[in-house]
Length: 128
Image (cartoon, rainbow, N blue to C red):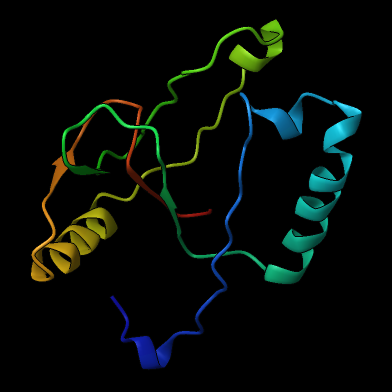
């Protein structure tokens, strides 16, 4: 992993999804959010990795998804069928997950690595 001095830090974004995958269902109420997301991506450039911290988890301690092909768990109900057909095939990055695990461990934060499964506490992927 490169040293922090040799990398440009990207901004941290909080992206709420609302009930289900709200920004992609085409609801007029979500037009401003969808517009913002489209606009912000043109300004940020392509990241080398994305760290997602989710409030949806099944583990008792913070769990870092470390598999190379994490899946999706649809943990919402009552939405149109297309909400359950969404595919997101971003690759995981086991080595980067291990590095994050080690950084958290050094701070005495209780966590675990999970090589399989789809519901995640911390999700890591690299863009291609």
